[in-house]
Amino acid sequence: MTNKRPKPEEIVSKLRKVEVLMGQVTPAKFFIFCFLKLVLLLRSVYCEVELIYRLIE
Image (cartoon, rainbow, N blue to C red):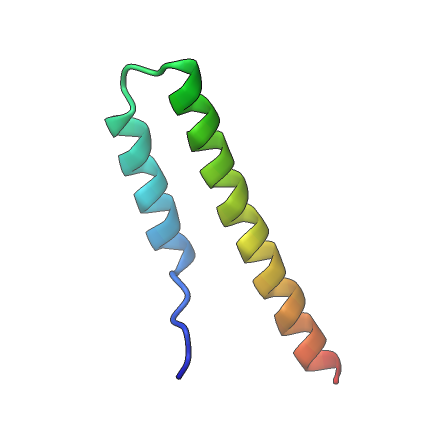
């Protein structure tokens, strides 16, 4: 079974929706939002590194 990765456009769309919903930002919400953005960034970087590693083999 393969995991389907979201397309970059889908990720951007979801992040924009979250930004709109966050309207009234509290420090806790801001921290959570930044943390989630970081997680998505690290996941995409990991996927790219994994792809490059497969190409090298």
